[in-house]
Image (spheres, rainbow, N blue to C red):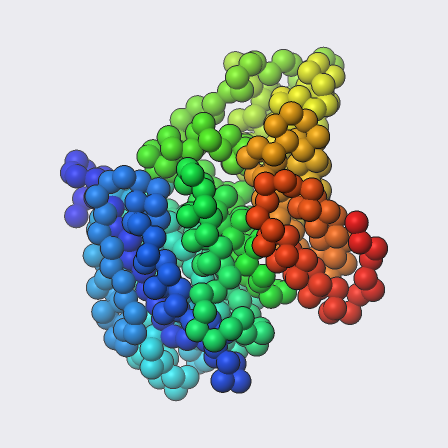
Length: 434
């Protein structure tokens, strides 16, 4: 089927539950429970689109070829596609290949009873960019985890937007047969929000509130998130433009639809003095006066220091013109936070997001969605930290910020405290609480 040709825009949702993850007879991840809960959410909400949608659920499947056939059928859908996988990742010990374990998969017969991970990307590779979302809630066993740590990610397809978590082997079970924290938080956000949040915001909130074990792999990685340049589905973009300006700002350093970057409501004035060029003779500002596309290009090409320097110059100028708590200054503070995230400096990114959240809380409308979105950015960056000292230091500060948010669901604060305590108890002295 020609996915780029004319035809009805019909969407597809494919939900797949693989093998259960068990440790010492305790269920760590119950894919069937996740699938049943997610299947109760309307397909239009899952997709963020009102196009007619087909939904297929695979639970208890034992034949890899059955899964392959369903993947192939889903990939042929001309409209938006969501593929959800929950279960156990395993590996072929001899071939060092990752597999998605199905019901009945055993270590001695992985190659014949599980789905090779590359099958997923192979079926999705022909789909146009911006129409495919892959949502993962997985646990890796002792054979798969070393391969994931070696690669640092879990590749799917360049044209797909991938969000999810992979828990390491041996993590403490959260309760036999219950819906996992990540999937539950994703569903709760969809049900609670009057307007569907973007997938990036859903993922940030879910990953931050899921109570993930230390060392869990959160997808996308910083490098993958910073490299994204493809379009997003038009229906979803139109739905969130006016309700989630903050989330756009988290992604605003790249064009939202492949076209020109949107400008602020009022023109951004040129700093004076400001660098007319950076090393290499490149202009610091686009001809229309908006520096953001150029700063994004610098960061995307790996010139993070230059991008951060220019963004700081613009922020200082805007603060002098409009004030430190103005909307314009907040935009540039949040741009700097996203640049730090793209550079992999999650400590700085989390602190910049927290600073923006505090300023928004102190201003008019402090209980609005902008403050909550800034907190979500801080939580996401905090979950990406892997050094115990940084996790605890930033976490103590983050708990204080979350406590001050009037519109925050109290469960998020409880889960953040629980994650912080888990890291504190791993060997570091406890810092003073804020």
